[in-house]
Image 1: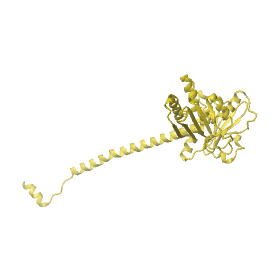
Image 2: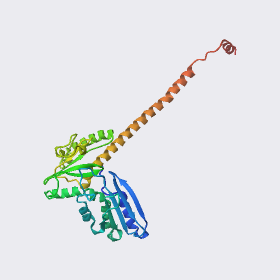
Image 3: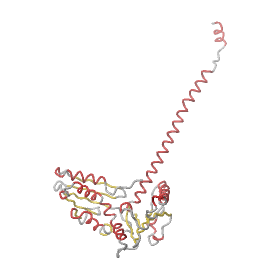
Length: 316
């Protein structure tokens, strides 16, 4: 199994190339989309080649998810804490985006390791923004407290019009993921995968991991959630107790499951193709044998001769 990287590889490569070639002043204007419908737009003009504008569009939030000024709560504070005065938040953002950052590349640290670490952090803007509420909750968990203005049920967006839910308490945080898949084969594979995922915790080396459960019905913690938000066709996965997993892994758990479901489906298709190819080869090997048997029986057969031909052969 693999874990998805928190930074955007394309964004990081673009930032590194731009930082290494500031004097060239090449104009940039790139759009791209990553998994779970997170869209990026990076732009650099010839008039000001040292200034880079990075715009991010988040997945469409569901009705139970609360955004503040187009962003999850705590996102502005998380951006300021992560990037300091090297990044400026533009208000309002570019049309069609939730966030636009202005980055002055000429003010990057001179030390190459520090510069690379900062650009990796910029390329992880998705984790910083979408993971901000979860980070706040886990920080309070470490302090054995609960934020005074925190709702007992927190819905966080992770896919278009889909949320996962958190129940913060002073001694534990419970995270529940309604698992939805469009393809019927994916539903079967995901159900089997999640059941094995829960059973894996019972192995000797994973006894200290956070408890995990799976069920076809919503847990009791979701009794106040609207029914349309609970239309899961692959069950519900629940993590509880002290969560020692990272914010990124929790934020992208559904993508993690979807990736391995697709890998399993691809593996099954590969096995099926190989099986069909082996059967075809077996049939092809059988064809020459059948033709040879016909030729052999034909060569061994007797030719019927007429009366005149038999007399001619007898006198010759």
